[in-house]
Length: 120
Image (cartoon, rainbow, N blue to C red; front, side, top):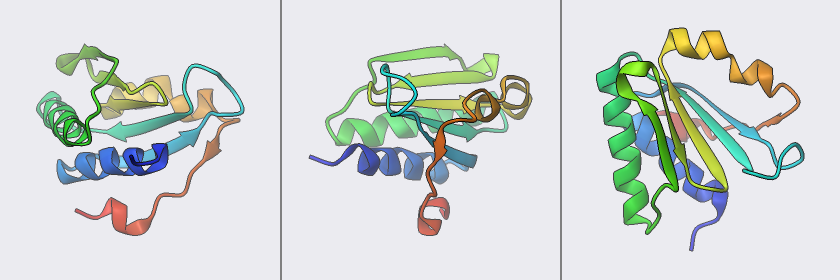
């Protein structure tokens, strides 16, 4: 079985395949108990959000993992995939700027993502 970070990298790779942008990984392990990591991804449109969610769901299903919850509406600018130890936020630019999760969780450690992971 893959480690949590390996699973996160698998999900990020699936998002990059569908042109997810500005991906940030926050390590929350020292700050909260409900999840260990937040993955924040920008999508440009509701159609792209849908494609990213479907691709992440497909590749994670191949790993034998399903989200505990999927919340949000593609047209609403923000979809959340909860995989228990990590939560993926897929947000359109206006929504991401408004909620600014990186600022809200400024005390979280940013995990540097491997450069090759961010290239489709």
